[in-house]
Length: 367
Image 1 (cartoon, rainbow, N blue to C red):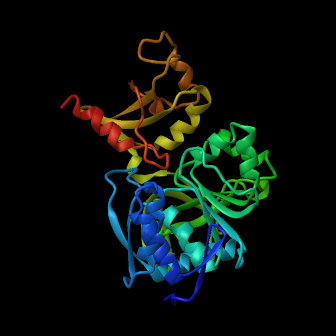
Image 2 (tube, rainbow, N blue to C red; image 1 turned 90 degrees about the horizontal axis):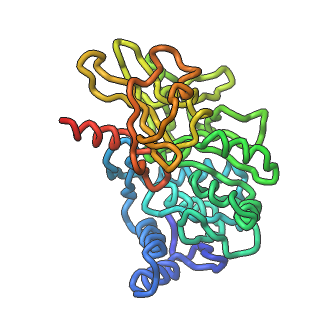
Image 3 (cartoon, one colour; image 1 turned 60 degrees about the vertical axis):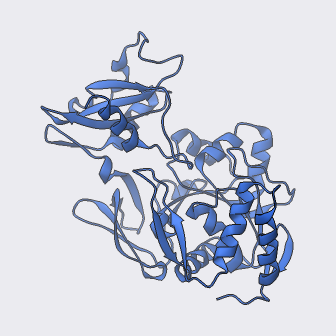
């Protein structure tokens, strides 16, 4: 797949594959190298091993993380699609500031290798720091990293060094979307994908008002919806055939689509099917706390609609507050029957709410 004399550029320095393997071995065995950097080297070793597959771990947003095997040839095809979409050329640079134990971080390395890019990397913190003063052509971040960087002038300057900012791993708030739309100097994109599709298979612009809103599939990706409105993905080049996702979607005539919510989040209460994401969109303008709606078992309704709120000093279970203000735009069936406060919401490393885990932990308290 790759020969030992091929040049790979890492942090601006050229290595042959053989030299890179040795470099990684030294890093892995060093007592002073941090774990996140060792993870990068361990993946590079894995990538250049004789194995035709890579084992990856899913994010665990809807349950326990699981390990799956991906074909290297499919990962290469995915990398080529991204390189083509962003018109990346040999010698361009890519910034890795995500954990390499998940697919998004791994694929930044693969794109750099396949596209013969210069891979620059930094510690995957909530406020990543780009050491080099020069621009990078592509960087991938989760929404929380972008949110934190936008809080300071220094962070904004860092984001302005990126030609294409690819944001994924979790949903983006309206506030963050509007902020990015009002920063024309930052070309930002929101990705749709999952570990099983080797990161994104569709992208929507966060910088172009004419393309704002819907996801557009990458070349070679075919999408459709079934009778339950679940999104179906066909992408033979990356080994995805008739993948029925858990996402409820709407498809449009121009080939784009929007995601309404998750099929596994749907609540059936008193025979009425309720989509939490739709209800949350109606509530969010009235509440500044983190929150979500979910269903818990109920002897009469089957499932009872509940509003879960992450408490703070301004709003908690002891607050004297008129909660009806939250429900102004809700129909009779969309109004939560109960409000439950959590001290801290559980999230995955990339910022996704662990809804099912929190709901189940609450339900178990009363079993």
